[in-house]
Image (tube, rainbow, N blue to C red):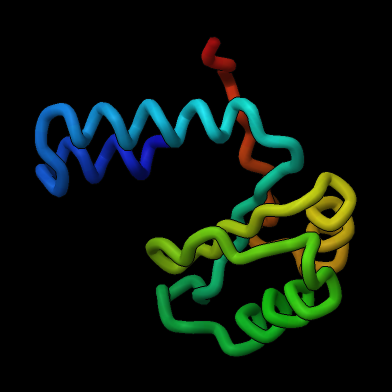
Length: 111
């Protein structure tokens, strides 16, 4: 949700539109089943890394219909899908910097 909030703070959306989008996305995320994780697509110098990109593409292919590219943002891929697909993809991807892939958690639930 931080990305949508940051875009709102940057003035991409105004007033009610900003609040409606951020609140709506938070509610959809809180109600959704499944999981998401973050994995870098760049090397330590922020250059595109073909091996990492190919590894992510392979996982998307292996888990068709259960794992999806949510967004590519700032050199990182955010992948979302079923709990099983996310766990299997995270295990298959090579660790990066002793922290990636990292699961993206939901910290709150809206009613």
